[in-house]
Image (tube, rainbow, N blue to C red; front, side):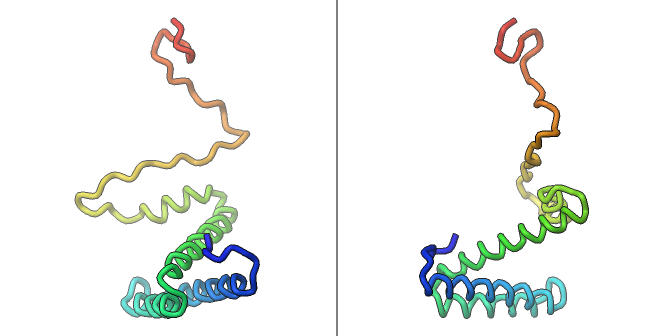
Length: 133
């Protein structure tokens, strides 16, 4: 994920800067009215500082850090709600109607567990799963 993956002091410092920037970005959005220009401007301020200081690749690193944080938050929430994290994610992003002309979003099946029944065979009528009649 991060461009500096070796365990150098510079890499550790950069990772700490990214963690703080992710924290600052989330805090800025949560402190502002929902879906507001204020939230957007605060988020852009954090991102612009990071890019000015560490270069354009830092924006991608921040996005990756935020994606990991979101996945961890959804995982924690799923354990509280008793739902799979992907189900929560899909419900969260699909609670708005599709924009006009948008392509349909493909369904992502939840990962299978050992408790799930075996997958159904889709062999044509009169044939077994190996294609024999």
